[in-house]
Amino acid sequence: MTAKYVGRRLAVIVVADVVGFSQLVGRDEDGTLHRLQHLRNDVVDPIIRARSGRIIKSLGDGLLAEFASVAEAVQAAMEIQSAIATRNAHQKPETWIEFRIGMHAGDVTVQADGDLLGETVNIAARLEALAEPGG
Image (cartoon, rainbow, N blue to C red; front, side):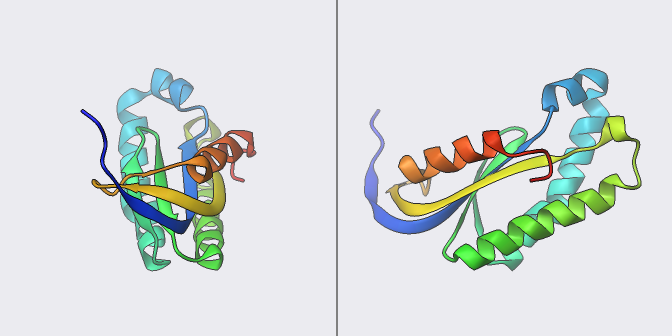
């Protein structure tokens, strides 16, 4: 089965991933998954939507989102990291959920199902991997 491509467009791609997810799950799988789901529902997803972003897909412990505006993408990332830090301040450090976020702007290839591919997505993912926790 081959993917059908419907075109290209300019986009800001944001990739976010939980730092140390395997260790968190190894210590407390149910609690970690519960906290992550609440964090996504209460903080991450609403901020992305409020900043006119679109979540392309969830990647287990992370996500891929698209924005039309660099300023909105940066603001969303800053708000997400700030809100997570505030939530973590009330938790034990060994239970903290922290994200690394990477972003890049450029052309993307759009698949018929709405997924996005291309160098812009790959660069955003590489930048996420290089980011400091909370960065």
